[in-house]
Image (cartoon, rainbow, N blue to C red):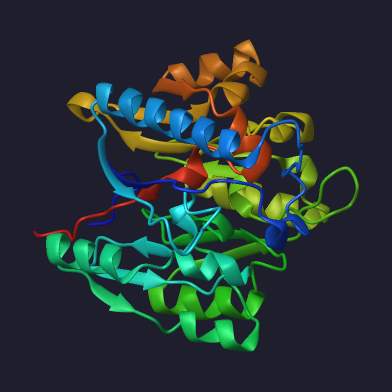
Length: 309
């Protein structure tokens, strides 16, 4: 049995959130605005994090909160979905990271805690390619259609095509890869800023996909998987309207999680489509979005407990 969404997520409460110079080279969403002092940025980010956790728990989502360690300093620890994934077959995969300072986010204590609680088997087959400068950053790099065994990914410095193939072989997934760029012809650093996928809906910035044949191929595969596609524009993407995650909330009701900036830029018709099948939860994340270049989806690592028939 393969579930598309879960009711349990892991989030890391940041100790030293801030602008990461190592990732800014290929993350056009980041800003190094110096209006605020680093200490103020970090404090405000923790406030946004705490409000999001409180709101999600009020909606019935099971949130596992892990405190970031103060040393070594990890400015992007709030984005744990990039360094591991969990699966209903009992596997936990670790991933090679583009930024050297982000590799510090992989913590043995978190892995041990998850393995103790859920009895995962840890797999490092993909991780070893980090030493060869080949990267694949978890569910930032890839959108997983778990129910249909399909993997969607836009190629970038952080998403190596050969690693996509290796990972898909381990999962026995079909790969749908493509090139996607912004208005300045710069590749999007992660697939999860332009695409999200749930039980019945898919969000996609179709206009960002360079090749028309690739557009058709992606859309056809989504249609074959019985997904209704909500097309988001590049302008909406700038407000993180592609950086969303569907989970199960109270009474197992499906819930789309997004930032308030993402919600505010959606059209009324887009919101109406979502609300036909889902509840929407949104939370303000202006500091995390501005300085981190990521939003709500990036902050949540999905926990899929092993399925027991």
